[in-house]
Image (cartoon, rainbow, N blue to C red; front, side, top):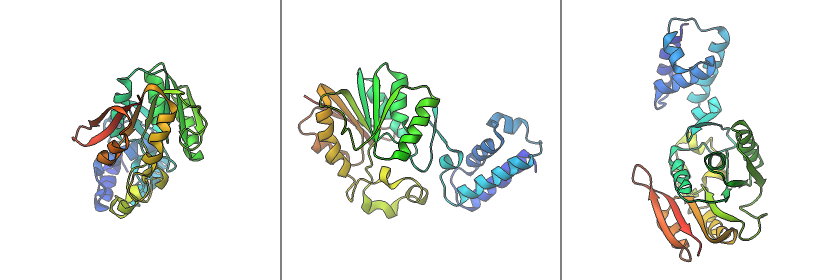
Length: 270
């Protein structure tokens, strides 16, 4: 079995299973199995796969065909130009969340809190892109372990605290609070893609029946945690409803993503 044949057969298996981006997925899985990059795969198309590579590649293909997201199969996802470790204990970082990073970088802050950090992608990125002191919280101990691994691997100084929202921190501790909270309505669960619904952590996906449960608690908690003039930035589900919850805030604006979808709410505490 040559590298070229393995790619072709893997692509066919994925296409038969109606997996999107079958060729790219086959490449990513074979790269993971061999430990080589894409350029190597195509430069060595006639090389024979060693037995260990074939065993790993076959297992990865099986996992993907069974519906497991590619990122969980490989254990990695790129975010803001860096590679983060991901497991089924954390939400897979999405490119759209990089808009939250861009919004945060546009406002200077010395003390930042990331609520519901998951893999730590937001907190670690802000720690590396700014000179701020960054703290991050999550109720999931499993997520905290992954965030800790990512912070260590990327040499980011982040204070990680397992807790509900920002409970341990005193009033007025931060200049900036950021969050990508769970905002998918529980009533929409059946409409999600199976690889999301069945594999990513429900705790990080669903925000109650209407998707707003965490926002109802997060917004007043952010008001408590922020210094006067501090900023709250959150990724959005229902932009209209969340904006209405920020009636007591000033400078409220909505940032759209590249598809024109409302993605990030920005608000300043008076």
